[in-house]
Length: 432
Image (cartoon, rainbow, N blue to C red; front, top):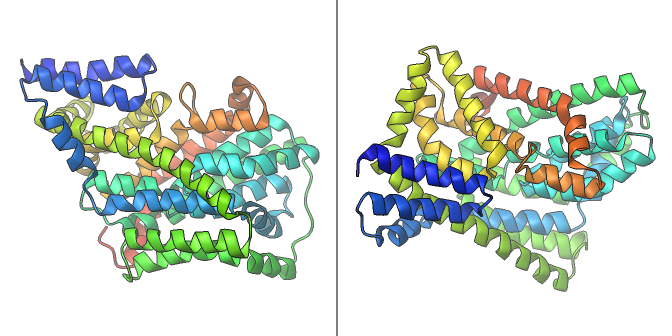
C-alpha cells in the first residue's frame, strides 16, 4: 500500500478508537498492528519496538518518582505544607485560595502529579474553604487548576517521559526549566483568585508573622528536603535522575513511616500496590507508543506534519499558536502521557524550525497537557475534583472558566518569552 493510505489507517483507526473510548493503550496497539499489516511488515516488529520503547536507563526514574510521590502524598505531609503556605500567603484577601495555590506548588514538587495533588490537598482544603464562606465550585476550580503546577515543578515523571521521547534532552535541564513557569502559573492563578475574592468579599486570614513562618518551615523541612535530594543531586552532577529518584524513594519511606508517621508498614505495602497498578499502565503505554512511533517515522509523518503546518503560514507566531492549539485539542480527548509520547516526535521538529528550544517546547507540552487534564470529556483531574467536592462536572467547569484564561495567559507568555523557561537552565550551565 501507499504511504498515504498506511498513514490514514494508522491515524484514522487510532482517532476512531479514541472517540469510541477504547483504553488508550489498546487504541495505540491496535492501530499500530493495522498499520504494520498495511505496510506488509512482519508483526514481529511490534514486540521488538515495544521492548525498544522501554529499554532506557532514564526511563527507570519514572517508577521511582511515582513511588516517591505516592509515599510522600500518603505519609502525612499535606497538613504541614498547607500550614506552611498559610503562614506565607494566608493574610491576603481570599487567603485560603492563595494557600491552596501555594500549597500546590510545594506539594507538586514532591508528588509530581496533578491527580495526587487534587485528591490529597483537595480533600482537606475544599471543605476548609467552604466552611469559611467560599463558594464550593470556586474552591474546586482553584484546587484543580493549581494542581497543574506540580506538572511543571520537578521532580515530574512526565518530564522524564518527554526527555526520553525527545531524545538528547537533559532531565536536569528540564527540571530547572520548570521552576519559573510553575511560579508564573501560580502567580497568574493568584491574580485571578484575588480579583474574584475582592469581588465576592472572601475573608482574609491571620496577619503575616515571620516567627510562625519559620516555625512551619521547620516542620515542613523533612518533606521539602526530598526536592533538594533530587534537584540538587541531579543539577550538581552528584547522581543521575534515576539514581536520585531511587534515593528519594528510600528517603520518602523513612520520612513517611518514622518521622511524620503517616504510614505504617501495612499502609506502605498498600501504597506500593497502587504504584504497581499505575506503573503497569504507564509502561504498557510507553511500550506501545514506541511501536507507534516506529510507524510514524517509517511513514515520514513528522516531516509531512511539519510541511503541512508551515504550509498554513510562514509566520513563527502563527505556527507557535497552531502548535499550542493542536496540543490543547489533543488534551481534550487524550491523557497526558500518550500526548507526550505521540505528539512530541511530530511537533518537536516543527517547533525547532521556528527557533523554539526543545527544553522550552517540553515546558509548553507539559502545560498544554495540564490544561487538557481540566477539560472535558477526558479531563482526569476535572473528574477527581468533581468527585472530591461532590459537585456536578458542568458546574465546576463553569467556575473554572476564569482560571482557564489565567492558564492560557501563562501559556502564551511561556511560548513567546523563551527566557522564562531557559534562563534558569542557562544559569546552571546547561546548553539551551
